Length: 77
Image (cartoon, rainbow, N blue to C red; front, side):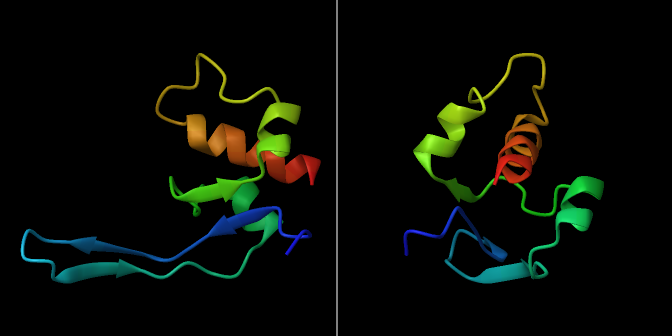
């Protein structure tokens, strides 16, 4: 839908035989929790317009570039 600004999902690890293990079930979205910790991790989908509006990924945030981008976009939307 046009109103969707961000998509994230639960995660599983998958071994070389295709078996899933160590599921990571994420909570419903919470701005307060997001400000406290990066529970979305790396698998997020953003609208291109939002990424461009906040200037994309920034140098100097290696290791936390996803969290930085997510926070800036979430504060914008």
